[in-house]
Length: 169
Image (cartoon, rainbow, N blue to C red; front, side):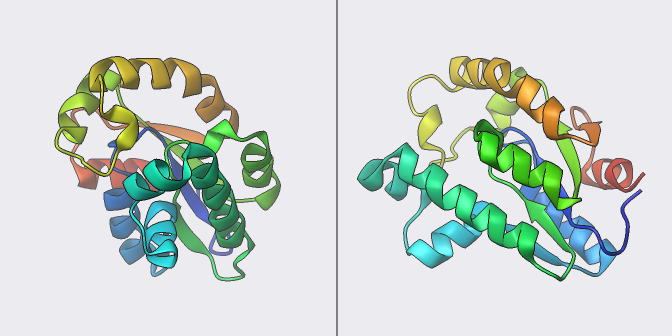
C-alpha cells in the first residue's frame, strides 16, 4: 500500500506505459506527476534524441540522475515516472532505496514492447534493431529493476485501468 506521505515511483523498460500510468495514478491519488524524461526535455530545450545525438548518453544519464534526485527530495508526495535506464546507476538505485518511496516495476515481455515503441522517434537506443535491443536491455536490466522494486506489476494484456488498480493494490 502507498502511504500518503510517500512518493510512488514507476520504473520499467521504455514503452511499458510509465507515463500513461503515472498520469492516471496521479489523478487518482491527487498528486502531481514528475516524468523525468519530460522534465529533462523541458529544462534542456532538447528532446531525448537530441541530447543523445549532441551530448551523448553519459550526459543524458547525468541529467536523468539529477532530476530523479530532485523528485525524490520533493517534500510533496509525487507520482514519478522514471526514465527506463534510471536503474543503470548504482547511485540512483541507492537513492530509490534510501528515499522511502514505493517503487513499482511495470514489467512487460520485450516482445510485446516492440509494437508499443514502433514509430517512437524519441527513443534513439532503438534505431538499429528495436526487437534485439529491447531483449538485450531487458536481460541487462531485469535484476536491477527487481533490486529496486517493492512490487512488480505485469502489464502484458492489461488495460491501463487494470495496471493502475494493480499498482494501487
